[in-house]
Image (cartoon, rainbow, N blue to C red; front, side, top):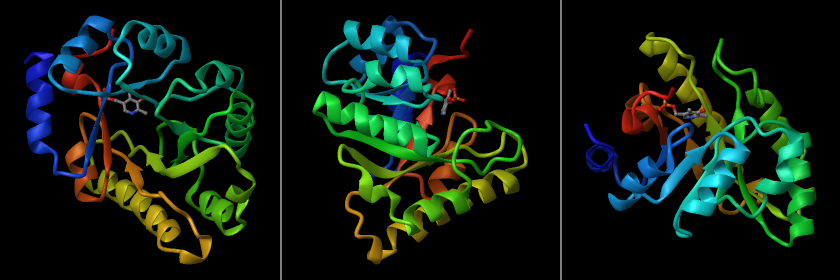
Length: 221
Ligand SMILES: *Cc1c(COP(=O)(O)O)cnc(C)c1O
């Protein structure tokens, strides 16, 4: 299947209200352009240098989501280039994004990455850590960062029960935070979860953003 036919097929399958982030990491700008011509506007990248090179070559109405582990020495060049940094995995990184955004005079929209999968990436907040972050109102010190929701990955396994439980846990942490009116959060409404092999389960469990790469663009080399 071509990139454009996969984009069109996915758009028909996704319920309204679920945003498709087309994960274009390691794929050339020509592939992104083909998706763009099929109407896709949101793309996900996992390396800062690669994202900056693609931003420079592609139309300015693209929404770029950063989805990879962000090293602190790469924060400054990324600020102002993304619509959403989905992968904020530590308070240190969050505070650095905030201070660099303040210096640049911009507000950066981010998601807090949760670590629920058993054997996958080691990055992200444990559910209790993230709940403590909000209970302790640590978001109040941020001046130039808008926390829009949470992002997470399920365990990389064929065991659908395990995958569903991981997504359900991410959604539960999200709801615990978003339904706590004492926090006074505004615009905390995004749950990014689900990739090529598990997105239908993520949607059933409450995803509002799915991040799909290889299903659209083919295998990465
Ligand atoms: C690469 C990546 C994806 C997309 O994975 P596919 O299996 O190619 O759909 C989604 N989320 C994150 C965080 C990724 O690094």
